[in-house]
Length: 339
Image 1: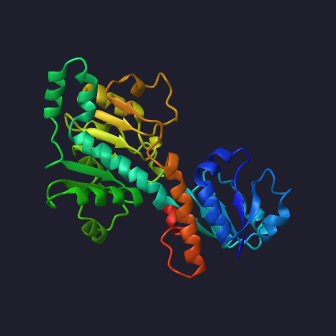
Image 2: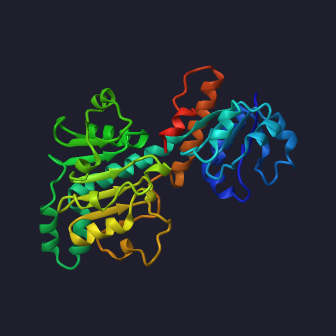
Image 3: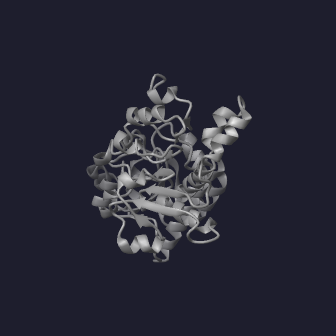
């Protein structure tokens, strides 16, 4: 059995226990020789002997950031890191540069995001968000508001970013259609090839056209170079009852511009699971608008869903041991485009 450690920042017991439940830990201990203490930069000297012998490492949210020098000096036998969460951008590069393989449970963490987003899209086209603020005050007026929305049949949905989440949303929506042309799905993604677009059954568009869709759902990768890419020139193109959904990153949105577009046309709506900053400031323009629906970054794994991530990583470990293909390995090249 390979010798393994859990890498985690100090005080991260809450996240570790959410992901590595007793059931998950029982399975993990049957797969590897697991060191009993979580290790991070704060206590790595104390547990240096275990780090020096570790061949694989497991982690989740709260994964420490190590330098290449620390990895080479303290973890000379390490061959793989299994990260039971989503984005590895914060820590992966030094490991990869040292020849350590990195695996991520982005597929597991993406499942609830896809489910959440598809639910929001289907509700959005039915007028759910526009009618809620009105229904208790004026039931008939709320029904009239909902009646102005397109419904799911014949609506146009724009997906920004066709990565793991965006592609999952597309496939789920397609699977719900009785006929292929019941709903048009358009995609903005500079990295989406014509062949891949054809495989997904979508039409590539530029951002300007995407924002003329009935619903726009943002899944662009969290990259510094696209901060503020979503601005007033786009939000002002939203239809009278258009809905903007963001489960991607708040920094991609110029929030004052979104607020302006929503204030100008109150029948528009925004459903935001992410903001910039998080949490949003109480005086932020978006916080003052009744057509903004805010949730606390909860589209990803929560509750019992978190344990799925550990199971995905243990599946990946077993595949690695059998020299089988693994669909969740991260490469240096992938870091350029993934979230």
